[in-house]
Image (tube, rainbow, N blue to C red; front, side, top):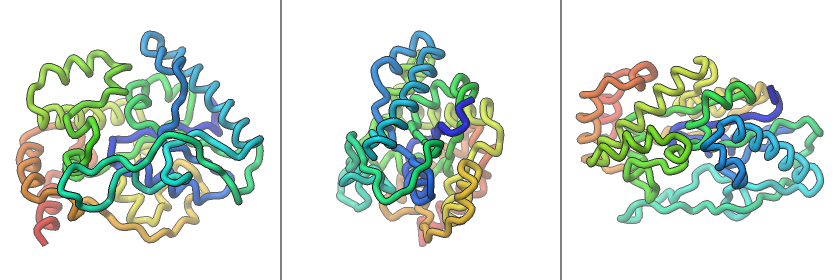
Length: 282
């Protein structure tokens, strides 16, 4: 087990990028947002253990880059890990990604040779989850299912169509299941259940963090990943009822969600859906 190399996955639009930003506020920690891991990793589609070995080599390579050159691969905005990778304002159209793939410069932070390196990738790490947990400390972030659906439908990303290409690459059965569903909302609800059920099946409960708890605690809930996060106290806003979301669409999605029996109900109550709809109406 690579104790200092940490895997972070999560439902897309659940706050994984925010978690990375918060972790980067801690000493002796570097958290990277969806870096390019290399072609060999993606060839692990046919051999998941090969993907894990490629990921291990990636961690080693990035550690050397950081120590020697103070550079690391990551999606970034103006050279820094952001709190959000998409536009945060209403534009009258789906919000576009603002982060781009490149390198971030890690300055003004003291790092020991054994610093903790966190890499987050929601979709591919999710599809490989049952293998990754054998090799790396692995954590996942979840968020209220209705807020996730509302966010998916507000952005210009594949999830808005009910698809996750990176996960489908590693899991052909997921691709086939989604392809059988002509309605994008049905695909989104199926995906939501797939994420929650896999986390529930593979990870211990203490390795599954709720976005709402991270926000309410000012980031301290991340101590489950990095103990030093217990010192965080960052003012954060819960955006589950964001004005960027379409209230009428949320009501329609809520009706559809409440008719299902997905694993998300093990993490959130049906009553919380109705409460969130009321908050949107304020």
